[in-house]
Image (cartoon, rainbow, N blue to C red; front, side, top):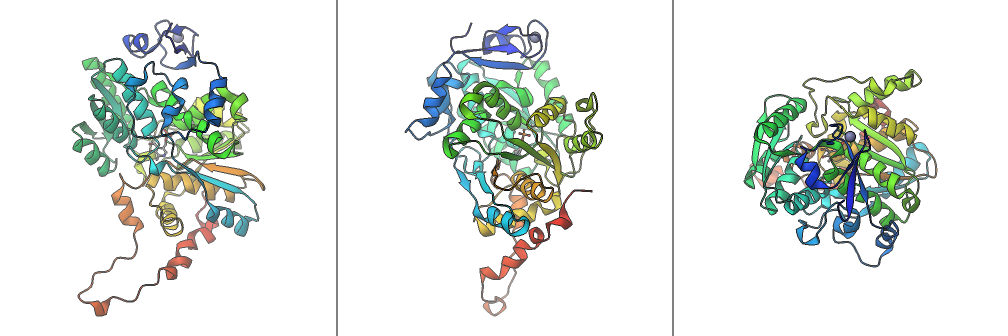
Length: 444
Ligand SMILES: Cc1ncc(COP(=O)(O)O)c(C=O)c1O
Ligand SMILES: [Zn+2]
């Protein structure tokens, strides 16, 4: 048995010693062959209480080393990710009051400030690089719509590990540039994310290389669950509502893991209000259908598959959500909802946030923030509640999006063509979409 933790197969309960056995078995349970495992720590749970309440300000997710699946601290590969601030945003509170008469407390996590690659994917990449280093692994494969690939490329490069990335062809160009500049290999697969995943698996199998195992991979899940610890540490309590844009849904799975293991310390899991961009929203579509039918027997296994979705926000475009049955049950247990938001107004929310908060966000963050507006409109948030929005990314890998968000450029021949500038004159236009949000809701 590993010193600090071991795994338990989620299907048959077989115990797996640690990563050495897990990797040697091709990331499958040696008994039943399933690839879904649960990480169990041997550390006294009360240690988490101490860490959450300690006077020491965390410098990264490694503050929670005792509850991360790495044996030796000297193998840590970090850039200070996972301890970014969670801020209270009064502009969203004022809006909820003004338009819906609701008194809310709204908190937004600033993953855009993550020092590695400016997304919440840095946490998983830091853990993955550290564990791979601990096990002397020199080559790795990942399929991703962009942000995971960029984060893994960065952290694995820091650990001297070669990464081959498989991205769908609609992924934002900037990701390929970030990865390629670091000397990590980028293969842009002609086809959608589902195709990129298939090609990545084939390549990894052919050469016997380890591959990132998707939304339940302990390397990602265990790192991301520390966000629940950070919420408790920074807010002192749990919010009533958790909002996030999902693709496959790693973060909600990670949150559930945190609450399953440490519920007595963290409190009750918030209602999961999860949104998807409307151009690729198979989980939202499946949920709406099941809900309309009163969640009949077997409802969670019924979901559509989108082939080659034409998303405005490709970062979130998982057309075949194979873990939907698990996600759907999770959301139901939390008394939450899955719903779509209009990708056409991603640019508008990014403008609003850049104007009011002076923060430039990426497109997947824009979709997540739209989740707040859609949830308000649908009555999913109630008076007096505390809302937490897990905002995932900054603009750094999405300059093309930032160019669409920008709205003040003008070509001139001389100074006489340039009018005096009054920034406040933009304000009514900035709020127009949100003052009239009902026109943009995805509610049928
Ligand atoms: C910024 C951002 N938000 C949300 C998501 C969705 O993540 P998941 O569904 O894996 O939790 C992603 C995935 O790439 C992302 O990069
Ligand atoms: Zn098993």
